[in-house]
Image (cartoon, rainbow, N blue to C red; front, side, top):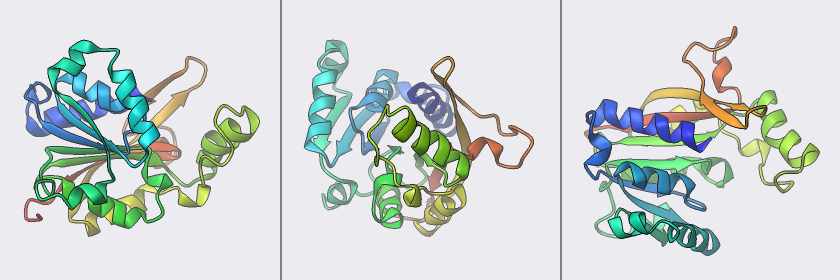
Length: 228
């Protein structure tokens, strides 16, 4: 899934900032970076990336993994900090300071998604994009993201996901608008278990409306230019 998400982020950044945008050192924050999989991928593009996470263990894992790539470490484009988005906003130079804000598979784990989205938008510069990937709240998402992986195959611990915390694209769009941004695009992320792959669903996918976003999806938004 990481490759599909990162490719989507790159394409959107180039659409907004120009073809060579990712090599110009745009400043990006990856909120809830976990083990740093996406954070490293974004830094390798040429972006200057700050990965933040509330978990000390996650930051430790991400930092250790990054040490395996001395070129990346020595580039100065990658930094990790144990801090939440809300805590980062308390720093005088953090508000409205990032050229892009990324948060992948995080919002479905927080207790107050509306406040979380507000924090993401607040970190972005006016006009900057915000990328959020998460899981829709449908019967299909319960099957492919909860029942099968957690209770049948047991490839992830039972209880990792709470179905009631899944966020529909419509709900997420509403939160984005209320936070002072506009939704640009929503694309489904289709898992291919046969080839262990993931791809972006075409905008017109399947026979039913919104068929591509019935499970995992990524939303791109843009902060309003009049919002600080």
